[in-house]
Length: 98
Image 1 (cartoon, one colour):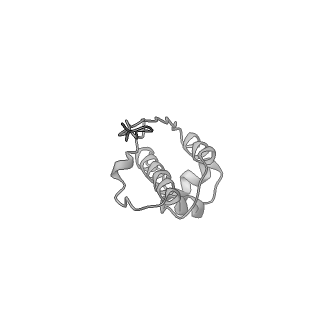
Image 2 (cartoon, one colour):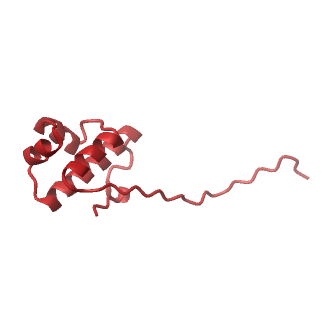
Image 3 (cartoon, helix red, strand yellow):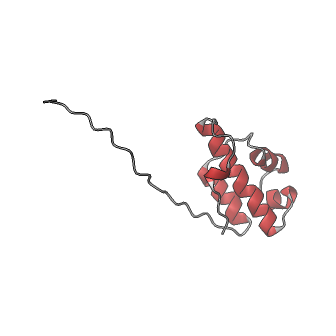
């Protein structure tokens, strides 16, 4: 299973879109590395262009979760999404201070 740790993405000032693009890039890069596939081989397996795969891997292409799933499964992988809920620091505001 490929695990992407969002804490390993170095630019914490990224906007949400760039952050999501980088996560997708990391997924494909790790998938290709583990499966020992070239961009061309991965593109052929999922019926996409090699240039499209390259744009995803460089974070320059927006990609839906559906498309990411199609690419990963075409290469024989799976996607496992885990959500961690952080405890929020509660800032208690008194409505009626004494």
